[in-house]
Structures are given as structure tokens and as C-alpha cells.
Amino acid sequence: MSKQLYNEAKLDEYVELIVRQGVNIQKGQQLFIGCSVDLAFFARKAMEAAFKAGASNVHLNWTDEISSRTRFLNADNSVFDVFPPWSKVMYDTLAEEGAAFLNIVASDPEIFKGVDPDKLSRFNIASSKSLKDYYQKLMSSQIRWCIASIPSASWANKVFPDAANTDDAISKLWEHIFTAARVGDGKAVKKWQTHIESLKKRVDVLNSYKFKSIHLKNSAGTDLQMELPKTHLWLGGGDKAKDGHLFLPNIPTEELFTAPQADSVNGTVVGTMPNVYNGNLIDGFSITFKDGKVVSYDAKTGKEHLKNMINDIPGMDYLGEIALVEHDSPISNMGTLFYNTLYDENASCHLALGSAYPDSIENGGSMSEEQRKAAGINISDNHHDFMFGSSDMSITGTTPSGEKVTIFENGNFAI
Ligand code: ZN
Ligand code: ZN
Picture 1 (cartoon, rainbow, N blue to C red):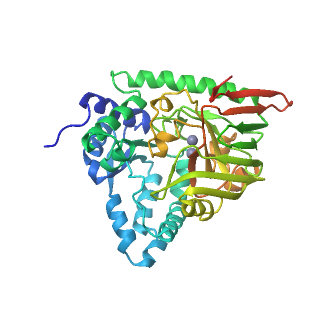
Picture 2 (spheres, rainbow, N blue to C red):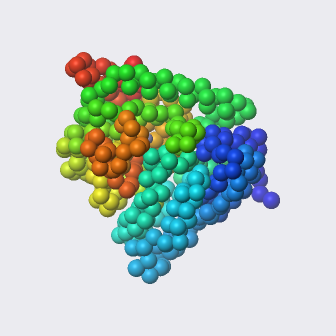
Picture 3 (cartoon, helix red, strand yellow):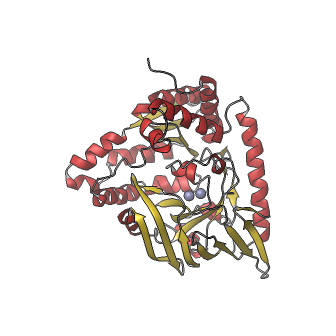
């Protein structure tokens, strides 16, 4: 038996948080859990907690990124243009039956380094086309879903390269994860209620201004002007599913976000953290927009992957999300680069290329794609976040009457 690398009581508290507030499993509901075979102990715990909370059944979808890598390196080339139809049926059936979806993310950020980018790209196109319906349900909160992370050896070693050994790196990462999830003294549920309330308060303040446009600027080189749709809504602190039950799509979450007017983004954004895309790192990058569309981009590392991110799937050459996270906030203050979007995006202001969340505009959740497009937000079958926050980020909003309001000063909220 190997050494236990986490505190058992904290783990139980974390599992409860994910099952009860994350996916917020209801009596008689099914739960889908996507989890790496290496981390089976966690999926089993989540399964037990879900049954205790009243789940009718729990389905485990075991993944293994080392086998995925082996497949990318060895399978017949034709394989990468097809997403397995049986897997599509699994997602669509469970979504139609009202299941909740829990995804445990613990990826090695460079798992597909050295794999032919064309294969990654083609498989990404095939899977996003095939899972379109499932993805739509997820983006519009028709189903409850949650993404959370636990350490894997390869991920922990990447985050803590100076740790004495792999076990030490894993222990450290567990503690960071528990802290970010406000887990530790048995009061996580209460702490999350307070946290959500404080995010919602700020959402109300932002919404009260009905900003016409915002201007983002810092010394890293970001200088970006964007209009916001007339009916835009700032969101944060979890979501309400169409069945009326609250859930937390991400644990942790520190962001307040909305969608830009897709065709009214102008200027340049400079990334301030490495970005993980298709199991590869993109770093030292910048993207320039004109009338919403990406017109140029560059990267010191992984430029080919950035190119594929922007070009492979229609709509990925426009922005779908602008999210604000203070420089002085819990995950950012850890001063740790996580190489995991779920963590890094909650430590930094970020943008996403691709689809906007329908709820970023009034009544967006009940609109067709065409209606949402007409209301000004971007449509795509993909959505990918990248970070651009900094300690000197300044954000100025312009109200419909032309008044200038300082939203962010030196990386933190000024309103
Ligand atoms: Zn976000
Ligand atoms: Zn996002």
C-alpha cells in the first residue's frame, strides 16, 4: 500500500462539495463521471457520495490519456476523422435522460507533445461536430455539470518541478486544491454560500452600469476595446439549470464573466500564462482582432497549435467570453502556475475564443443559435479560454450615456 498523499477528512469534504453543490445531484437522478483510470479511488468516492445523495444510478467513463497518446501515435490515420458513434450515443442518451455530468480533470499538460498536430486537429473537429447537441445542452445549462480537478502524478510534477519527489508534488497539489475549494475545516458548504453571495453582489454592481463598451489595458501589451451587447448580463458564482436547481459548473470559481459583442472587438491581447490546448503548450502569445475577427496572432511556443485553435472549428476566430478575476484573489495569491485552465482561469482575467454562454444575454438560454447571433454573441461548437490578467491591468467601462467608469485598477476591482 502506498503512502496516502491527502487528508482523508478534507477529501470527504471535497467530494461532498462536488456532488452536492457542484453537480447538485437530485433524488432519482443519474450521474455520469468521467475520470482517469489512475484516479479510480476518487471516482468511487464520488459514486458513493452520489448514491448517498439519492442518485438512481452512477455511470463511470474511464479515460486514460496514456492510451490516447498511444492511439494518436499508432492508430490508422483514418481513425482521427471519426468520433466513435457509440460514445456520442452515450453522451446524448444520458443528457436526454436528465443525467448530471461530472468531469474530473487531471491532465498532463503536455500529454500530446510530439503527436502530429494534424491528427489532434482532425479528431478535435470530429468530436466537436459529433458532440454538438450534448455541448449545446451543457452551454445553455439544460443539464447540470461540474468540472473539478484532483492531482495526477504527471500534472503534479509539472506544477511543482522542485518538489523532492512525485509524492511530495502530489501532496502539495492536493493542499492547493483543497485550499482553492475552501475545504479544510468542515465548513466548505457555508463558505461557498458566502463566496457565491459576494460574487453575486459584484455581478449586480457590474450589471447596474449596463456598459456599452470596455477597454482593457496593461503593460504586457494588451490594449483591447470591446463593445458589449445591449442585453448582456454579467454572470458568476454558479448557475441555475433549466430545472431550477443551482449548480457550480467549475470548482473552484472566482470569475465574473459576460460575452462581448462578437463583431466589435478591436486591438491586441497578450497572454500572461502558458495555455494548454490539445495536450500541448502555447506560450508567449498575442492575438489581434479587427471588428471581432482574429486578424493576426503569434506565439513563441506552440504557434501551430494556436493556429489550429483559431482555424479548425468555425467561430473560433471570434471571442465568446470576457471574464474578470482580481489579481488579489485566493488562487492568484497562491502564486502557482497550474497548467490547468480550470485553475489558471480562476487566477487571472481571461478571454475565450468560440461560443458565448447563451445566458450571457437576456433570455439567451431560450433562443436559437440565429437569435443569439442576431443579439450579438458568438456561436461556435468550441470554447477555449486563455489568460491575460496582470497586476497592472486597468479596465475602463463606458456607460450608454458616455460616462467613463474605472472597473479595474492595478489588477483589482475599483467599483
Ligand atoms: Zn471563464
Ligand atoms: Zn470560458
